[in-house]
Image 1 (spheres, rainbow, N blue to C red):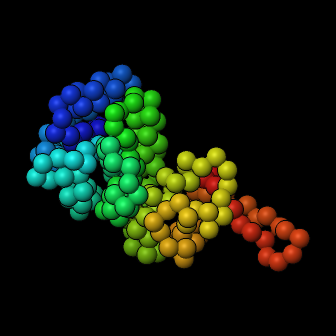
Image 2 (image 1 turned 120 degrees about the vertical axis):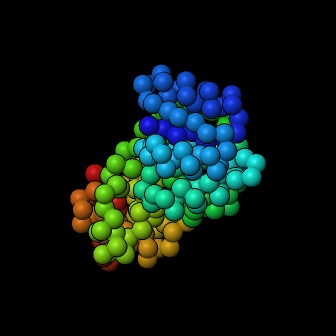
Length: 200
């Protein structure tokens, strides 16, 4: 089940049509508050949230859903491409962004990718607590790696994320232990080998 939270009826209709085209069930809410209430009833596998809504905007709605569930994928629908907005949503627990106007191929690929990452992340809460791993940070790093076409160094990964170098290093070690990523060592003419990382 996919939950659509958007105050624009036409957009909700469009997204439901896109979902039905690939036989995904979808439900909808016209406000952030009603969306959070519906979330508790239907327990969706993914949530789409509009950024600009009256009363509860997308940021407040994202935070409210994260208090209820720390692993469900959340895609933000927005016309705003500013980095500071993206950073605010990532820190609040969002996993991805889809730009308006909605393009069906882009939205479908983002939903598929986020559902895949969501399944890999779900059910690991005990391990997270034990190792000091946060579900939203792990999901952000995994999602970033899924989008890369080539292996990257820690510095390259850190440059693309609002996450500190040491944090990226710790999470990559955790993912390597689990076998979720492959570590490739590249030897230069001198010095220590440089590790690069990619999703397995």
